[in-house]
Image 1: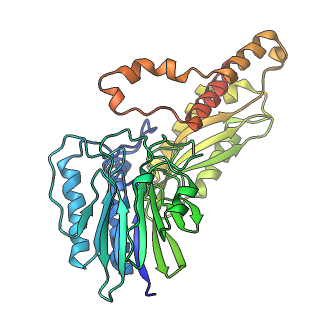
Image 2: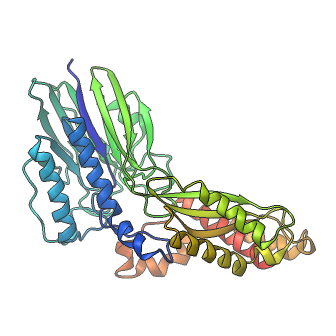
Image 3: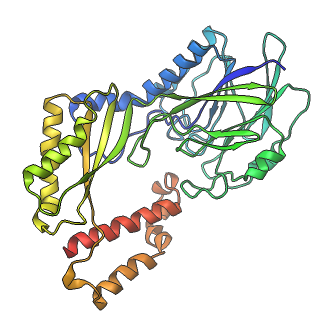
Length: 402
C-alpha cells in the first residue's frame, strides 16, 4: 500500500490572550500578541516544506465563538498559501470555536473542508489513486457532553481511514469532559489514525491504532509550559511514523531556586541570576517562573512576599535593560513546614484539615456560573485545577502563619 503523509495540529486558539502576566516589557508585548499567529504560520511553513498530502486541524482554531474578522482573514491567508501548493485542509470546530456563535463569516478557499455538526466522512485522493476517508464533526454549541464517537461510521472502500475528534479521553481530569471516549472506542472503529484535539498537553494515547493529542501550538499561561507544536504523520499500510514539530514562539518554563539555611539578599539574588543565565543563549523567548525552595530557611524576612517581590523587580529590570530572551514573570515560595510554635496545635490541625476536606467548589462559584455573560465562557473546574487551588491556599496559609 502506498504511503500518505499529513500534518496534524489542534487547539490553535488564535487571538487568545496570555494570562498570568502582570507586566512585560513593551518590546515583549507585541511579540506575545503575535505569538499564536507566528506559531500557526510556522505550521503552514512546515506543511509546505514537508510537501504533505493534506492537513488536519482538530478543533478550537479560534479562541472564542465570536471570532474577529481580522483573525479570520489572517487564517484565510494561510489557507490560500496551502491552496497555492495543492494541499487540502480538513477542519473540525471544538468547544471554543463552535458553530453556534454569532460572527461575520469569511469565505475560505475551496481546498478547505469543514465538517458539520453531524459526524460525516470526506474523501481525499492522491494523484497516485490512494484513497483516504476522513471522519469528523464540529461542535454545534459550547457544551457537547454526548459520546459523539458512537456516531462515527466507517465507510469501506478506502485505503486509509482517519478520524478527527475534539474530545476528552475518559480518565483525563485536566480538561472538561466534552465528547468523551475511551481507548476501546478508538480501537473498535478500526481506523488507521485518530487526530485528537482538546487536551493541550501533547501525548500519544494509543499505538494500535495510532492516536495523538498534539497539544496546543502556543502556551498561553503557566499551566501550558514547555515546547508546543504539531505532528507530521506518515502511514504506510499498518506501519506508521510520527515527528513532533516545535512551533511555540514563547515558551513558559519553571526553575527552582534552592537557598541555604542561612541566606543574605545577595546570595539569593545571585542564585536567581544563575537560573536566568541558563537562558542567555536561547533563540526563542522564555517566560520563567522562579520557585524558591525555602523549606530549610528559618529567616522570615528573606522569605516574605515583600522581599521576593523586590527581588523579582530587580531581576525584571536587569532582564529588560540587557534585553535577555528570558522574562522572570513570577516568584513563588515552596514551603510546606509549620512554625514550631504552631505544630501539633488544635488550631493548625483544624485549619489544614479544612483545606484538605474542602470540596464545595461548585457552590462557591455558582454566582459566576449563573451570570448571564460569564456562564458562556466558564467551564467547571477540573480535578487538577481544584487540587492546584487547594495547594495554593495551603501555601498562602502557611506563609501567613510564618
